[in-house]
Image (tube, rainbow, N blue to C red; front, side, top):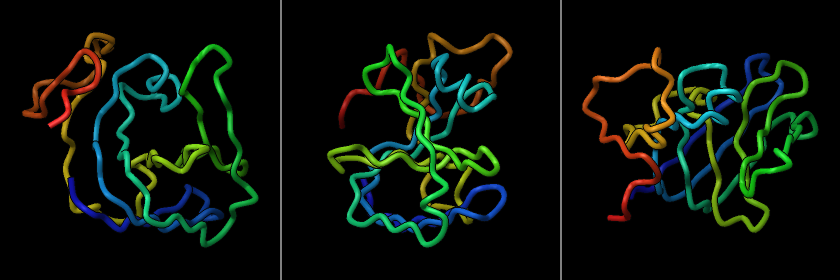
Length: 139
């Protein structure tokens, strides 16, 4: 785990953010929900224990979609362009940052591929990132 300072924006540039926190997990998630939400073979997310979260522009454009039958799955996105945006847990315990929304290299690399047992047959594999059928064991 390391402290990171992240900044990013949506595709249209209407929403910008700065987040500082302790990196808990940087993962490529292959679950069906993440594939549907991202439109790709996996979602790449950085999970942080936040120190600070600052929406520097466009916070009013954020929209949330809570999947009714899911305990934890919520999509946060820009209402103008549809880009995935960071999701701050209601209790501020974690922030899930879509790595694709970052404006620069975060300085950390993925720790794991998770929900690998749900990976679409056509999706990527073959790199050296450890793969798990659920979440990785805590170090």
